[in-house]
Length: 221
Image (cartoon, rainbow, N blue to C red):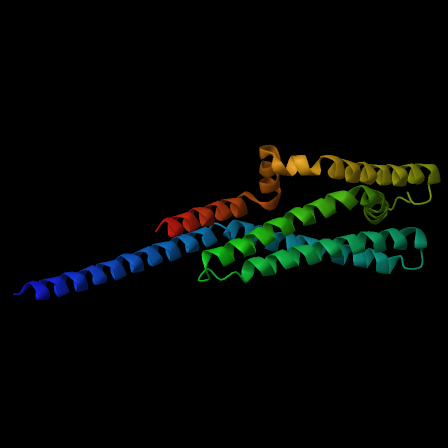
């Protein structure tokens, strides 16, 4: 066998080996990405459960509002509470759709972008829920006491109702001030990142970390 033939065989074998290594790396990457997707199943299940509970709450509030549509003292609080519940339901539904439509055969960068957008969406939903929660305490009290115990708190003490409404507005204004004053420093701190991960869901944070590791592995390869 001549030297040129040996070189050709060597080159051909090297090419086959490179293709095999590249294929193995791709298969390993796809397997790792799918494993990251499986780690999100608890988050998806929790989101579905939250949707079911939110929908049940909307039905109960709607039934209460229908029973008291001629009584503004109860109908208006129920309407406000219902709007709040519907807004939360819509936000959670959007998250469930985003989770359910992720394709794990997409490039890692594209999946990372989807999950990061979902993470930010969950954080903003939680922020909005907590921001308006102080104002919802009063309608919730009126509706719950009337619906469960038949107690007419809506007309019992106007001073108490006004004080609760004022307290809710004060809490919201204070929260907005703190967010604007210290929000940037909190977001950049390790504590802020940990808090954001807890709000968004640990499984989502873990999946993002796994995808980042996969991306670094692919770049090094």
